[in-house]
Amino acid sequence: MAIARSRRGRRRSRLTAAAIVVVALSFLVDACAGAGSGGDAEPGTASASGARFDVSPLLEPSGRALGVVDDKTPWQYDIVDTFAEEAGRAPDIREYYSSWGDDFDTEGNAFLWQHGQLPMMALVPSDTSLADIATGQDDAYIRRLAGQIAAYDGPLALSFAGEMNGPWNSWGPEDTKPADFVAAWKHLHDLFADRGVTNVIWAWTPHVVDSGTTAKLRPYYPGDAYVDWVGLIGYYGPIDGVAFSSLFTPTMRQISGFSGKPVLIAETGVAESGRKEADIRDLFKGAAKAGVIGLVWYDQRKDWPGSKQLMDWRISTSVGARAAFQVERARNGFGHSFKKG
Image (cartoon, rainbow, N blue to C red; front, side, top):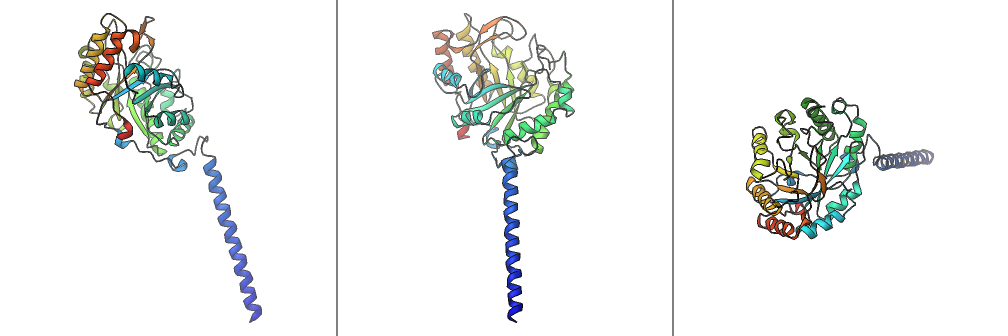
């Protein structure tokens, strides 16, 4: 009997030791998988990264946001400080551009969000064919990008191939069919959804319909299931931008026929002229009356779309322009923190 008990005891010890080894190995495998997911094209999903930020509460803001856009990276925060001084208030949205193939700047976007700005990334396809994107030729990049964005614990407004109706773009109507744009947009959206990305606000951003962009917008619309915000791009300048009623209203009416999504003026500015102060007043008054959820200002010098004519869109081109911006921004209620919902 003593020998039998001894054998059973040794067998239990062996089984216990084996179980400990199995648990330890399982822990190591899981730890290694988690550690390797950050830069891998395949893992990097929301479930693998642990990121769970849900943008649902941000989709219909209760107030009107104020934003700034330029071509600097998220880390170049001086544009935010300069804008805050000129506008009399820090921006709620910080929009920037990113080229197709670039990695997502997790730390830079987190820095913006921690400092009160909703990051908005305008993803530019550059010379990449939208038809190729739609057929899956860049899926490895899309999966990597989706994983990187999912691992960022904050919201991101994402605009893809903006101003798709602009003939000055390589993905515009002279080079790309509307069906290819829609297919590419849906493919990008679907791959993000497949990977459990919940922190992206999808912003569809056409240029306003005017004398230089006459293409109908309905064929470019991916559908309400694929869009969260409609973001319009239009400038007050010497050609088409003479009043909100002629610059934005006709396009908003056209879009209202096929979409009821919230409208954000995703990029705008008023060129330096003798009318700048009056145009700034008209912009804010018209935007508030139209019920937009926000306005993003391009506070830089920039060529007029489709031409080489340099325009100065900055707030501080004159004391009067700066004063008009600050007064009208406050009077029309532009300033809404996404941090508060």
